[in-house]
Image (cartoon, rainbow, N blue to C red; front, side, top):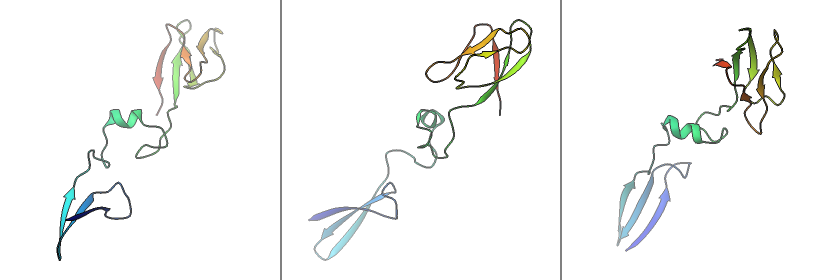
Length: 113
């Protein structure tokens, strides 16, 4: 009895079939995948690299940050690489780190769409 694993279709990640040769007969056994590739969970998508998601999307975003002193709203990039100051009272709103910018305590923010 000889058995060969063969991918069916153009992608190797699709369902694989196991072809079992018994004399002149060929038996075809379907093997399902361990995880669903078409509808991954939100948690799994969030942990994926930005280029390896089902639909590519960036990790960065813009947000409206409200100053705790004068209540003016400033638009800040999530991965800002410079210190962002409030337009009204010159208070530091966020400071850069290696990745995402760290908001100052007391600042409230809203993610933009």
